[in-house]
Structures are given as C-alpha cells and as structure tokens.
Amino acid sequence: MSNAVVEIENVSFGYQSGQRVLHEVSMRVPRGGLVGIMGQSGCGKTTLLRIIGAARLPGEGSARVLGVLTSELDGDALYALRRKMGMLFQFGALFTDMSVYDNVAFQMREHTGLSEELIHDLVMMKLQAVGLRGVARRMPSELSGGMARRVALARAIALDPQLMLYDEPFTGLDPISFGVIARLIRSLNDSLGATSIIVSHDVKEALEIVDYCYFVADGRIVAEGAPDAVRHSGEPFVEQFVHGKADGPVPFHYRAPAYAADLELESA
Amino acid sequence: MVESIVRGFFERVGRGVTARMWQLGYGARFLFYLVLHSGTALRRFRITLREVYYAGVLSLVIILVSGLFVGMVLGLQGYETLQRFGASESLGVLVALSLVRELGPVVAGLLFASRAGSAITAEIGLMKATEQISAMEMMAVDPIARVVAPRFWGGVISMPLLAALFSAMGIFGGYIVGVELIGIDRGAFWSQMQAAVDVREDILNGVIKSVVFGLAVSWIAVFEGYDAAPTAEGVSRATTRTVVTSSLAILALDFVLTALMFTGGNAR
Image (tube, rainbow over all chains, first blue to last red; front, side, top):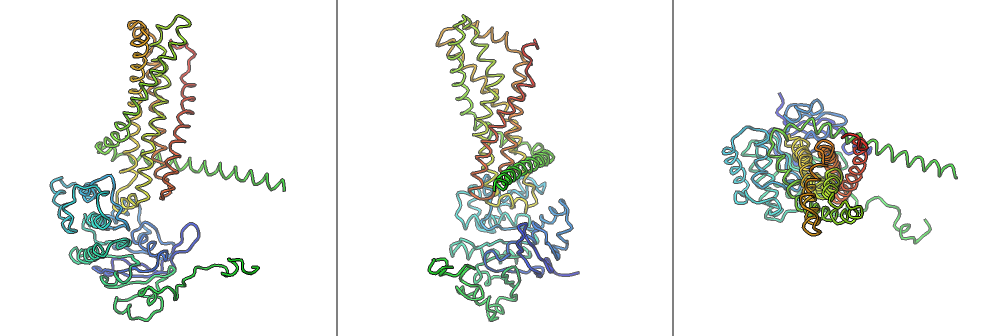
C-alpha cells in the first residue's frame, strides 16, 4: 500500500484544439504533504490541477487520486471522490447569490443530513478558523478580495477534505492578506491532517510554505525538490523564475518575425 | 472564379446550418438532462420558490403596468371601430377576447423574456465566468440540478401566472376607458363579456399558450446562460441571444398554436 495521496504517472494531455499542454508528467504527493506546482502562466500547471481534481482525464498515462484511478470513475464515483477534496479557486468563486454563512454551509446542506443547529455551529467554527466569524451575514460583494479568498477557504474545508487543491491562492492579494492566506494554508494543512497541492506563480512566497515543489515549463517538469534545494540548485530556469529575471531560458521576446521586417525598414 | 464563389457560398450556408442543427441537438439533450435531474428542484421546493420570486414577483410591476396600458389602448381603439357599427357595447368582449386569446400570453411572454429571461441567462453566464459553476462541480454538486433546474421551473411556473395577471389588468384597463371614461353601459360591458368568453375555447387555449411560451423562454434562457462563453463578451452575447431567440420563438409558436386551435368559429 503506497503512502501517496496523488500519483501521476507519465501523463500527457492535449486540448481539442490539438495543442499539447502536458508531456509525460510524473509526480507524487505523500499523505500530509504540502506540495507546490510552480511555473509561468500558461505552462500547463492549472491543467495538471484539473487532472488531479478529475475535471479532466489524462490523455495518456494515469492519475491515481486518493487511491482511485480517475479514468475509471463513473459519475457517482467521481462525486464520491470529490467529496473528499476541497478546492480553492483563483478568485474564490463564492456563490454571489448567497451570504457568507450560506456559502460555507452549502456543502453541509447538500451532502449531509445535519440539523441547522449543528450546521450553524460548524459554519461558525470554520469561519473562526479563517478569522471571519464577524462577516457571516454579509454578501460576497461586500467583502474585500482577501476576505473573499478566506471565506472561500472556509467553504473549501467545510467537510474536512483529505486533499486540498489551491489554484493560484495568492493572486491579487495585498501583502497582509497574502501572509494571512499563506499561514492559513500551512496551518490548515497541519491541523486537518490534509494533503495540499498549491499551484502558483508567486514562487518566492509559495516556496516559504511548501514542503516540496515541482517546476513546470512548457508542459514538462523541469525541476523538483525541497524548497532550499531548489533555491540553490543552479538550474537556469529555476534561477530565472525565482529571481524574476526578464531574460533567460524563457526568452523575453515571444516568437516573431525579424524586427526590421515588422517596421518595414527593409524589404522582407 | 464564379465556381469558387458559388462553392464558398454553399459552404458557408452549410456550415451555418450544421452549426445550428448541432446547437439545437445540444439544447435538446440539455433539456432532457435538465428534466431528468429536476428531483432536487422539486423535492426542495424552497429553492425553486426563490426563483419564482426572482422571475415572477420581480416582473410584476412591468407586467401589470403594461397590461393596464395595453387594455386602455384596446378600449380606445376598440370603441373607435365598434361605435361605427353601433356595437360599442361589445367593447368588453373585444377587449377580453383579444387579451385572453392573444395579447395576454404573447405580450406577457415577450416582456417575460426581456425582463426575467435575460436576467436568468446573465446570472448563469456570470456564475460560469466567475468559476462558481466549476466550484459547485468540485463540491460534488451537479450545477444543472442545483442552479439550472430551479431557475427553469421557476420560469415555467411564473409565466402562466404573469400572463393571467396581464390579461386581468388589461381587462381592467379596458373597463376604465370604456365604462368610466367613455360611458358605455357597465352592465352590458360585463354581461356581454361573460356570455361571449368560453372557458375551454378561449381561456384554456390562452393558458396553454402561456405555458408553452413559459417552457420555451425558460429553456432558451437557461441554455444560453449555461452555454455562454465564460467572458464578459460571451455573457453579453448570450443575453442578447436569449431575448432575440425567445421573442422569435414566442411569435412563431403563437402562430403554430393558433393554427392548431383555430376552429373557424365552428366549435360552439
């Protein structure tokens, strides 16, 4: 019996347009781990997260999540698997027609037969965990971006998931909200005993909290390791990425015809 | 040269027709799935009732005011024509039959499509654009059962009620103009109406029309919302399509239904 919660083996994936997004990616997330998947926008890391969340099936290779192969799931088994997962979306994706309280209570009402009294207590505990019990009666439109993200986090952990997925949890946050979210992710991971996967391009910040990380470029894993090892690996891509250099293995210029030709300085 | 233009033309037409047929098939399958998964919406009726409030109750003002004015205009125009034949006392019949058989369902349907249908499309489209639909799927809740079906049934329930209120308000408008303003005999206005309007031939047929329009508009509205491209532009296009397609569908269905119900006056 393997100790891994997520095992991705030689997964390749392409969308219908024919563009190939992932090439033979393999990765392993141990139980209780907090693992980062990092890379530029458009490198395929969100697709990888979708494959782990079983929203997409691997074209080739296999994805085993919480002990089941995602390609063998039918509708009911898929929903059964997802009940054990929580996902934090990039901008929270709170239900805008419900109050904060109802958002957090949503899954409890849909999936459990708990009484409203019990749900009330549970919702308050989840909101307390993210420090936002005070806004329970507000609507999502009355929250700041950072608060919305924290409420979404409370909603994602509503049913104490075994696996938490975070899609760009830090995007667009001010430094204070950012620190709060980062600390919450770490402490929730440890206190829930859950396994977490963070997809992010905020490398420096993400490296502070993860146990292990994978760097993805052009749909391939180019580097992996513990944060300290990765920081000092000397791998040119990681070097460029961690230090935010404009030019390097990832060129500053997107493929284009010769500059002079575009400016019509010479007959092309 | 000519050949290629002709071929290009046919290719474009062919592509357009195929795309429409594909869309229609997709829409039909969507409706089928939606009806199959309506259990939640009907069992937990509070969710649907909430949509009846948004689609129905909030449309009341526009429906009632429009009904009143349409009825008052009918009163004026009808009197103008009827008094030439010395039949001005039949004004009640004219107003009631026009409203119950035609104008009630059709105009209420058009108003419903632009007031409630567009709102349903925009809401579902925006939920999709802000990942709320994906979030729901990740929480193992079927968005068609939880978001789409209640809105669909809310619309289907609201529409006949709105059409009935529209007709009632219109008859009241005709009464104000005919009896109170112009001075037709009150007894003749009501008694001739009572004698001439048949429950099955006129009222039931009108109700059937409003039910059919309600189904059509609600179906188009939820489908366009769910099918919208998840961007600001996609949602705005989908909203426009809902209003245009619903309006055309109402007018076309009205002709078909009227033709089917037409008896040439032989029924009685």
